[in-house]
Image 1 (cartoon, rainbow, N blue to C red):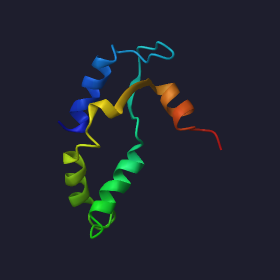
Image 2 (tube, rainbow, N blue to C red):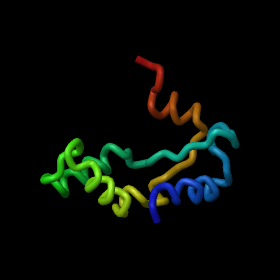
Image 3 (cartoon, rainbow, N blue to C red):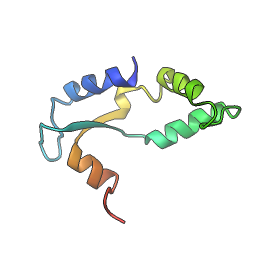
Image 4 (cartoon, rainbow, N blue to C red):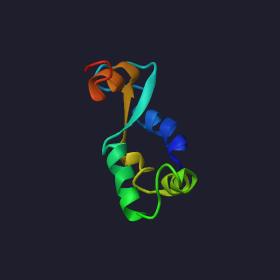
Length: 92
């Protein structure tokens, strides 16, 4: 199953709620093991591919990658908590 199909399944699994603040709207899905680590692993497995020059090939590998598309590695957050608490958006 691709990541785009896992997003609604992950939110449904989490009862359409972010457990910490109990918010039910503007939900997003976050990788528990960070996406950048999983993508770095994918790049390490395919050193012949350059992210800029081989975007299409890497995209096709990513959508088939079991680690990137593992529902057990996804958690539901509300948008505010995801952006501000997890990714420190707006904090310099």
